[in-house]
Image (cartoon, rainbow over the protein chains, first blue to last red):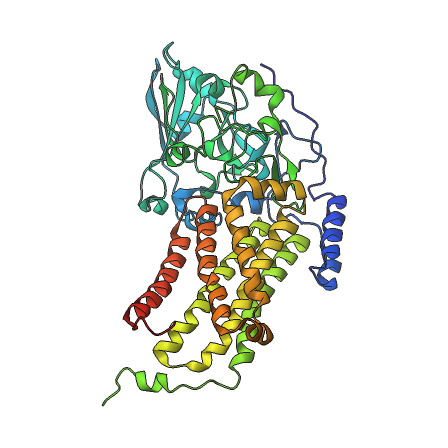
Length: 313
Length: 217
């Protein structure tokens, strides 16, 4: 299937001026802030030494701009390093993601244990800019670097019985202190249907912003499925297993009525405790409408034709 | 009798002259931090509250509501155990601050988070139990704030006023249910606050059980 990149990014990485004026007016009108603060409004500058976004945009809307490096690497969920969104950046500092082995096994002709370098070597590393939507109703635009999962799977040669792919995070409470708490079942596991996993938008990411993946973002290898909620993007992967039955996934095990297996971004199916119709883009004031399949409907909707997406949330 | 724990000295503490003023200034500080922090994050991208300042600020003000409810309910046990009768008159101040913080919490939600999208506000209220419960808490706090003046106390008469203001226990329970339901997964923080509330409730039940039944509460 062909993936067409949408409009290329404009050179400006700052929030559009109109939005700034909007939020200034809104707050001033609400009478919440002193005149001094309002007068001091300035657009969000990229840090001087922060890397520039690189990569080919996929499925971006015309007003989508890469989320600043500071937010991409400073605000995320990675419960293996704590439950606050600033915890991963703080507590993953000492994590050493090398050497790293990845096991590929299950219903494949060619299973094996690979050193990360050998695992990546046969594939083309690409920079791609994707939209990212967290199940908690915030979103980002992230310049990922990685390889196509399909590439890895083809090399492993799934047998005809293989229907799903199961992923597992490193389980080592000495290196991942969050695993000492019982907040989730460890290790973190995730899964995709094989045809989803083979879809060319799915990445095994090794970096962001043209740099190696920071520890807090799931170093050294994580899944990126841009049309699904962020928690499907399992981090620090040590095992990829082909199976014949739908695997369990950690958040589904934790709260089955709130988090399903598919977890496709869908503005029409609310989380029981909040609406999924809108999202707050990190760095923006006004909420945006959430797009079906996070804006990748043209590409991936056919994977789910005939499926009740309300049932299979 | 020796007083190794300093218990006697502690009981003898009188109200410092500056206490009322200090209390008000201190109680305003979190609100100033919350408002200035969110304002500077939204307008100047300072990331004081991190990358998602509206959510973080909303939670910050909600936590301070719970803390002021705890302080309000701690006045009576402290007064009774330490004999600090002078604390009693500050209970109203603390209660009113709890109400002020819950209003700021709600305003952050309505103005900054949902941005006065009335459809969304009503849908939230109809569909989300934790929002319903939170709103019920605010609704029940309102008459307590309104009847907090001396004139209102007089008009109500002590007994009826006291009965009405027992609603604060219901408010505390609703606030804690709201907190538990709003948390995604990590319940550590609400459990800590719930434990403190449980202690404050237990103190009252214990005292009541030891009092002769004929004495009105």
